[in-house]
Image (cartoon, rainbow, N blue to C red; front, side):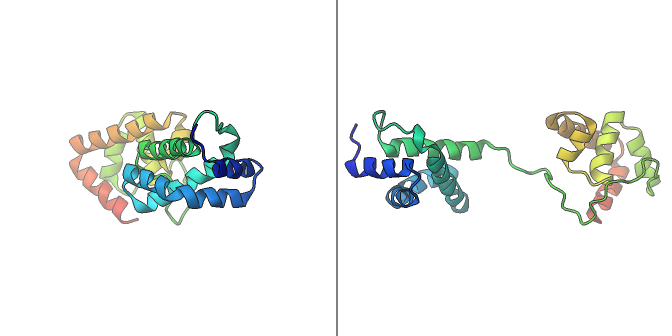
Length: 187
C-alpha cells in the first residue's frame, strides 16, 4: 500500500525492540507528527510532551501495526491524533487535586470548636453532607479526591456538595463567607 521498503525494514527492526529503529522513525516522522499535534493543542510545551508520548506508544504497540493495512505514517498519525484528543478532552485541573499545604496531619479531633463563631454557626446550618464536605476540605486540609473517598461518594458528587454549600453560604451568610475567604487566604 505505498509503503516504502526502507520503512518496512526499520519497522521490522522496531518489532524486534531495536531502539535505533525507533530513533530512525523519530527522525523521519517526528516533524510531521509534531506539526499535527501542535495544530491540535496550540501549546508548544504540551505538543512536545504529546509527541514523546506518541513515540512511547509507537514503541509499545508496534506489534499491532500491519503494513498490509496502511502506511506507517497513517498509523502513527492516528496514535498522535488520539493521544492529543485524549489530552485535550481531559478536564482542566482547576480544583485542588493534591495536598499543597505544609501540614499533612489530618487527624484533627472531631469535637474541636472553630474559633470563628459566626462562621461556625453558618456552617452548622448547612445540610449535613454539605457541612462535612466544607469541613474536610477547608478546615481539615483534605484534597477533593481524599474528601470524596472519606465521604464515600463519587468525586463529581463531592464537588457538587462543595459548590452547593458555597452557594448557600454566599446567599445566606455573606458576612460569614467573607470571614471564610479571609480564613482561607491566611493559610
